[in-house]
Length: 282
Image (cartoon, rainbow, N blue to C red; front, side, top):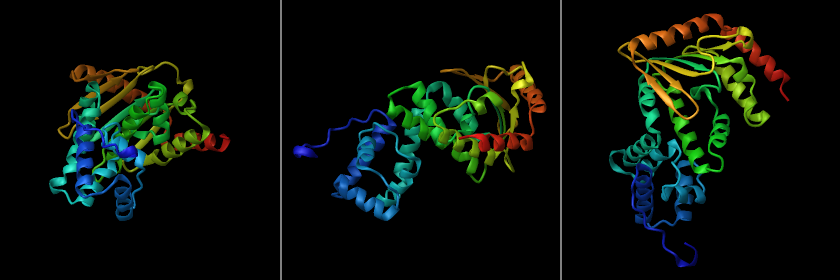
């Protein structure tokens, strides 16, 4: 530390603080300064990490990247995946209370139907697109934005897992054409949606702007079906989310979703729209 200062003592009051404290302890028990740890860690894992990022993680200011916990368990040869378990706890605590039930259902769902009427649904957002949304919501709070980005990528990891859900997505044309961030951000986002528009486990339909009024207009909806066949609905507003469990209300929302699905553009037509947009984009 500059001027011979010792690191500030940490009193863990959260999973994120505990993760940082245990990382600092493990590093110091090895007799490694931050610079020496980074040199050895990067050399062995080929995973870059800056001194500034390491400091923020150790102080519990930022949530570590998802890949880091398993690499730390391997690097320090910890027992019972200690860092991985602490990381899962830190992630769970970082999810706002109103979103936790949704997250648990989404994680286990065998089928997910989503409608994005204001922004591209979270499961399909690129890292750059999501970051622009987070920064707009909490300007200047980079720590919060970074944490939300990590949680978003952790959600999305299910799509590329060995057991992905069947994902069916409706996206309004106005959402696809609304520029979020720079042209490069939008180009990358469009290319990703195009890559997912028609795959064995994902299908995307665009809702044309000329369709007019429909039952889901102005909202955001996720329908999640559990392995036991029960479906839950989740409606989201600007800063709140509501889990809908009553079967009659869920069925009402699902009927609106199914009706809109039948009236929207097919994956082939959606892909054609995106390709033309990409060709015309600067």
